[in-house]
Amino acid sequence: MTLNTANLVELTLEICNVESVSGSEANLADQIERTLKTASHLSVHRSGNAMVASTNLGRAKRVLIAGHIDTVPVAGNLPATLHHFEREQVILGRGTVDMKGGVAVMLKLALELENPVFDVSWIFYDNEEVASELNGLGRMVRETPELFAGEFAVLCEPTSAMVEGGCNGTIRVEVSAKGTKAHSARPWMGENAIHKLTPALQSLSSYEPQTVSVDGLEYRESLNAVLASAGIATNVIPDLATLTVNYRFAPDKSASEAEAMLREFFSGYEVVVTDAAEGARPGLNTELAQAFIASTKTEVRPKYGWTDVARFSALGIPAVNYGPGDPSLAHADNESVPVGHLFDCEQGLRGWLTGN
Ligand SMILES: [Zn+2]
Image 1 (spheres, protein in one colour):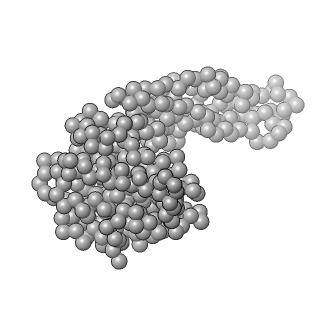
Image 2 (tube, rainbow, N blue to C red):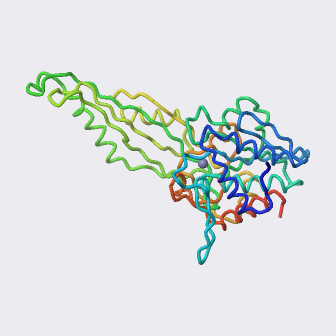
Image 3 (cartoon, protein in one colour):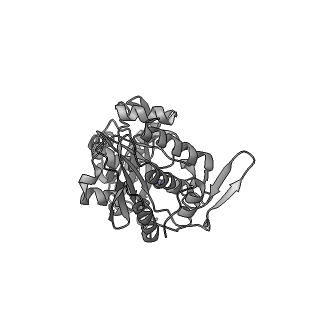
């Protein structure tokens, strides 16, 4: 069976209603692959449940347009349904926002744009909503890096049909204080590790997060304790206390610079990095980015969360997020996309890719 790309609203419903929770994307991937293969202007390379459909027109520039086809688990919110409110039409259901609305726009344009002004590689991939090592985009980049050569990338993650540039990086560290165990009736015999975290907690609560301007966008940072653990019993002075701290840093810094900042911030404590991911600079100063922003006729905002734009950025390809749906509804049980966003994104991408 192939998907019917004639009507964007029907296509979005159809894609949403092929359930594809992370790890079980095969059925949807098959349908997308068969649909792409009906277009003679595309060459399709599939790996597992990810694929790249490319035009090869010999254009001077190539752009990459990407979207993940998996969703978080269904919560009684399938099949997706179309609702008519007084002022707008909305599609309600799992995946409508994150991000099958974007996938529908991509698939329709991939089939219809036989003669784009750039060569285009349309990338559909699996396992975005789960652990990073399973990510289908990351896997394909490792397997076939030659398919990911391009000058600019658009990730159709939900942005309410606005352009969101780059993304903050993220790093998690464990900050530990050591003490000496003792009976709590004779605390002078020991040293309380929890109490020794006091300066660290005071520094955190008085810290004023920075807002950093990168390529003209203002990235708001944050530094927070997110977990605390200590103690073995209610009558024992603890000899170890650990805070887990998450620092979301602007893309003017590398993850190793963020780590250095945290080591200095928590000097005197043991600091262990448990997880780090680079941010992505918005790369809005390039000609392709400027043309993209002009075609979509929207203002550009920074993205605070981490997205796969950082994977393109790591390849040296500037990338932005641009897709239908309000990102704050992603993963919500009442996930829903306004039909207007679907058409806005279709029109924005179509105008850019056809030079109109
Ligand atoms: Zn997503």
